[in-house]
Image 1: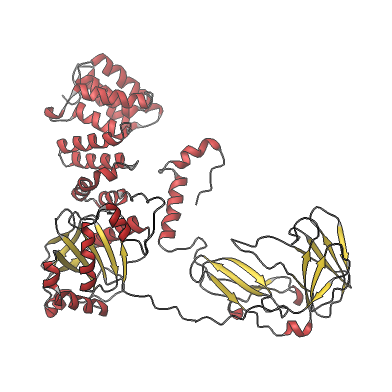
Image 2 (image 1 turned 90 degrees about the horizontal axis):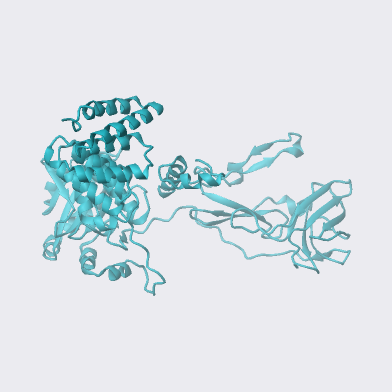
Length: 577
């Protein structure tokens, strides 16, 4: 992961989503969304100081101490919780359990009295004496130093009792305290195996009775089973992409989009016993669900999960006599569902089976069901599709209450970009047509429309491509790729009916102005626009400047393309004519 930029002049570059720094940050965010840990998901470790045995090194005793939990631990707080002279520990974790207590059951500390604990009481300034430096001086001259701190690790605070391990048969000469901002003070009367309060201005330590703390019962060693089924209601009407499946006959079975019908997309597998119970329940209540306006499409994920046994879903569906549409899910469908989940909820954990998506007639997500969903649950949830936006939002909350400020709706641009990455140009166009007002708010919408326009050009659909470029410019009138691509097509498209000299010059000059005429590819486009408009001297001069810049930048491929245009302009001809 790249470090944060130290040079103030690099801040703008770091905020660029295409910069290495920003890509690294987004990469870390993605890993966290997938359930990974910043610490690499390592087990807790405990090291033993072997200096007393002459080794002078540390040995791992993680397993022997019982400390090697598979937690994402962030801080450890040592404290003598039961007052027996040895240190117990609290750990705080990013994941559950957020707190864990480990009791030190080593029984020799209390008997040997090879420890002492002191607490400070200042009479000037802060009463707790935070920042004080405490030195226990042993009879043999050895000094053991502790500093009283106000914090330990991440969002943690240790006990204000300072613990000193003395070693066997140690005797204490005295204790010295350097109070914060003041001189050093010496205390007598401190002996091993006890608790003492050191009060500022009182030269003799005050012994205290053994401290006790509430007893803590040992927690269960097993992880509780998750409650199922779990329903995640969408807080906003996030549009889902069309989901491509296959019928058992091998023909495409596409679900979602603007269908005008409530749809349940059910994902199941032949090896999943809860899935079979769910399918039977849906089949038994199919007439009732159909009457309520719900279309059910059950798609098997057999074969999609690596390592899972793949059965024959067609045979099983026939055996169960399922009355609704059935087929197979595709890898593209699974990927799109994962992208939809991450857009709506930010999570990217593996999707379990059974799982179901409830979509409204516009192809927008109403709810996600993890685990079997019963027909009565579906019938209760179908009216959500008719709720107004604020009512839809309120219904997704786990409890009622007033809003301080309603969250912004997520902009599902990542879904559209994912469709383009798949090569599903038509799917991306269909998705944009449904949610363009939302997508247009995103700063990368112009990039998306550039890709769509370029894809349409490659397919020979110039009219649709020009419309895509224009749509992008409505959202971002200063998008350089859009300006350049649109101007180039208007200036040089092989079909004369798509050329427009005046518009080509208009957009090309704007792009050149944004780059201060220093981008050779933009100047190449401007030269083509001038030639289309019959301004051949301007075309030649502009192309020659572009050629010089391309050569300076050692971009031979671009230079060759500019030379091709120059060969036309010097003869008084438009590009390619």
